Amino acid sequence: MSVEIDTRPIWVILILKALRPAFYLAVALVFWGLIAMPTPEGLSPEGQKAIAIFAVCLILWVSNIVPLAITSLLAIVLVPVMGVLPTRETYAIFGNEAVFFILGAFILAGAIMHVGLSTRIALNIMGRFGRSPRQLLIIIFLLAAVLSFFMSEHAVAAMLFPIVLEISKGLGLKPGKSNYGKLLFFALAWGCVIGGVATFLGGARVPLAIGILKETTGATIGFLDYTIAVLPLVLVMMPVGYFFLTRSYPIDVTDVDKAHGVLVHRLKNLGKISYREYAVGLVMALTIISWMSLGRSLGLATIALSAVVVLFIFKLVKWKDIEEYVNWGIILMYGGAIILGTALDRSGAASWLVTEALGAWATTPWMVFAVFSFLAIFLTEAMSNAAVIAILLPVSIGLAEKLSMDPAIVTYAIAVPAGLAFMFPMSTPANAIAVSSNHIKVRDMVKGGFIMCITSWVVFNLVAAWWWPLIGMGYSR
Image (tube, rainbow, N blue to C red; front, side):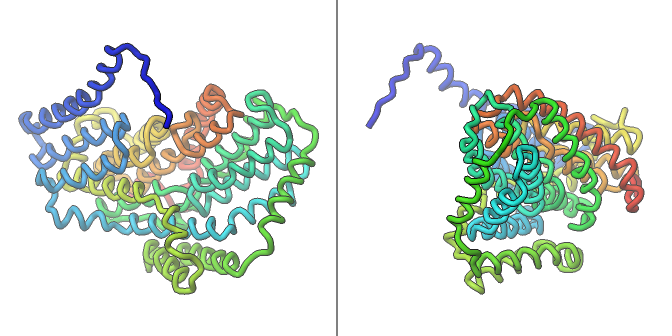
């Protein structure tokens, strides 16, 4: 057993040890101060308590001093204890359809990865079309994006990373020095980020936002409706991202024959496609078709869970094979966020916050949309996109109601930009995975990511202004 000796000065160790309890004490004082102060005019006592809970969760989400899921559990406990919502109602909200849709999506994606279907598809496409440096780069970029239409972008990045790493080693690319190495891993990360906003399946943030929307207003957004609205953004940002990357880092290799050999070797090791791969692929295809055609009538969660039941009835997967792919922390995080958002809305706190903080300047629907989308796209660089949605969406829905805006529009304004995190490794696991290759430095990601954030915000607002009216969507009801 190895023993590590801390050689730092004793005063430094004592200060660091004392900081954590001091932080918790400060958070408790903030909570108590907000509860004990006189109730402001126009705000109910329940609304005041909801704002105090919201403030505590905001501090904990931003600081990340405890896991996000634990902060959400704290919200679940405090909402009924403080009398904001009845206990029975609070825990009923946790059983929101969005939570079960997320659970079903995790299991379906886990089945695809476990049987090896996703890896086989990736290797086949790369090996068949990636015959030149430029083609291979484009294929990795497109593949990361398209797979993120159907699986969590985090899972796609984790699945493709070892393949791209083997390609870089096979080509003898030196980490930090090869432009092509940077391009490959940027293509992996940015493809996942851009493609991840195209459907409900790229990340759980969109189902979370729709869950809050449905609990607070009764409105919802269909699977196909969402994709039709957002796909132009993806189609524009893909060539924009490719153009920026290839201009920033000119391709410095002449052939990728060695990389092609690596792909062929890995594909041979997989053997022939199995019955389970065919069957799981068929179940996933039918599920997506059902989401698009029957999602509104049957419910997205009902279809997702039905598909999961089919997987187990036909013994295509076993629970022990799937449970590692189910992120229970995310389930808890999103359930708690939906409860907190509902508490802010039903207590009147969200409406009061809108009037006090934003009422003076947020006078037009366009301004509301532009400002909230801007806040979402930059806040998601510093904190979880789920936290961004939990913080901004209840407030934005309250403002939408005051301006007679369609609440679904402000849901788009926050849920979509909250997935466009390009700047920092901590912004999304796809970025962190790319940086872990050592081919990309943090300063490279910040430099390129800032330009992509600004560009994606502008493109998103242009899509809302020009494309959405053509498909019957508008800022007002």
